[in-house]
Image 1 (cartoon, rainbow, N blue to C red):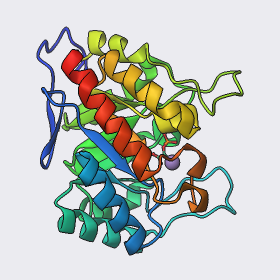
Image 2 (image 1 turned 120 degrees about the vertical axis):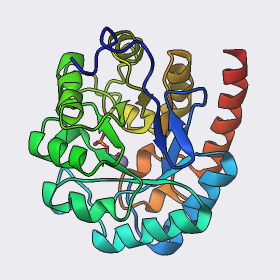
Image 3 (image 1 turned 45 degrees about the vertical axis):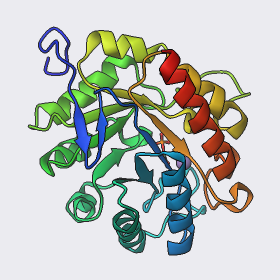
Length: 264
Ligand code: PEP
Ligand code: MN
């Protein structure tokens, strides 16, 4: 299999502008769950960059559990994230939810995110691969590691090896957390595959309180990066406020992480 460590011993390094996953650095992708306005994303970008984030995130198409929840600014959101990314010199990432949007999104973002609900949307995976953009492939919320790697295989076999895997928690019986963050997946993926793997403790826990400890645990487990949701005012966020760090808490986490990586 193309993703397997047996086939390729050397780690694949995925470059997204100035950020690089799978090499010596540990890039952190930060930003709000959803793009809400230019001002909101710009402020988030300034805070993210000041704290040391390597990439800015923000959803323009939001796959919400309820169709009555905020669905995202769509193309307007893409215009905003591209503009903010250029102004702050930060590579940007946003989720693509529809194969018909891949071409459009590729004009606006530096990396395409495939969300948990679409991990096995094989038409979308193939279409994303053909765009030649780097792809962040989140683990399906009830996917085994094998199924996740097979999803990556769809992208690889369509001629795109610029894939970063993202552990974001799986559905279990435990109600204290939104998902159960499976950090065992990190060393297992590193063992099985040459692809970089990052961790999203925001969706992985669902609560800002557990984000920092699990972010640190992810790095200790060998993760190649992190994805962290951050909002200027989490209480007012249109999406995922309860799991979003304030800029202050995000900055504190980044300081703690930097001392951790020198220890490691
Ligand atoms: C997100 O990153 O905002 C998101 C929707 O993530 P997931 O697909 O992991 O739920
Ligand atoms: Mn979210």
